[in-house]
Image 1 (tube, rainbow, N blue to C red):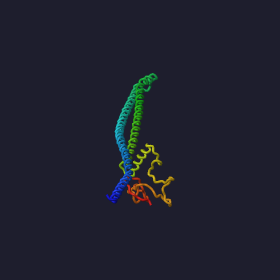
Image 2 (image 1 turned 60 degrees about the vertical axis):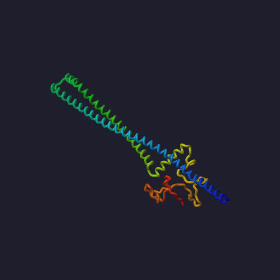
Image 3 (image 1 turned 45 degrees about the horizontal axis):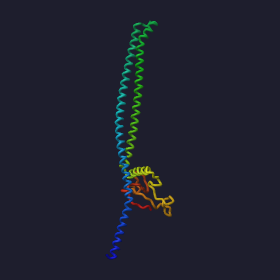
Image 4 (image 1 turned 90 degrees about the vertical axis):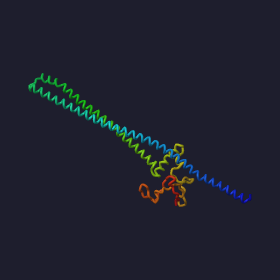
Length: 268
């Protein structure tokens, strides 16, 4: 084998090694990002399971609330019927008492003596006591029904507040999972930040959240004119041209979005 073929073979082998090293160095960040995305995906799946459980609890609370409202209506109806019955009984006893008193006065005349008045009072006393007992019973039933209605109303109010809270949390989670890239990115960033904190890493020391490059003195990398010349970010194409998603007018917008929406850019 001639020397030039040996040299050519060596160049080919060396080039192949360089290509392999380049591929390894290039794919390493992608593998790390893929690992992080898988961690976020597991967290999101866990959140979805919790969401389904909360939705089930919400449905159960709705059933309980409907049953309590039905019980409250039934108790109110019974209370009104009892009060009406007692009022009718009181009116009937009062009428009977008046008729009896009138009949006795008519029979005895207007010249009743002390003995007759005592005898009449003794005769009418059972009716008076029965009338007072009915009046006391009416007040007691009304008071008890009022307390029961107040407790049922308070339970229904608490269930309504809890139902609203669960609905708002469920809507927030669904919006984060199915919403736009910015919202989903912020949600994933929050989950990843919690994972890093539970791993014992310190924010600002072992990791940064939406940070820019700093030099050895801890300052942003700037040129002689004092302008920041190095920054790592991704650009959201939906806000291109200063059109913000919420309608605000801005000169330019840089968002942290998922990799599939990233567009390379250069800060000038």
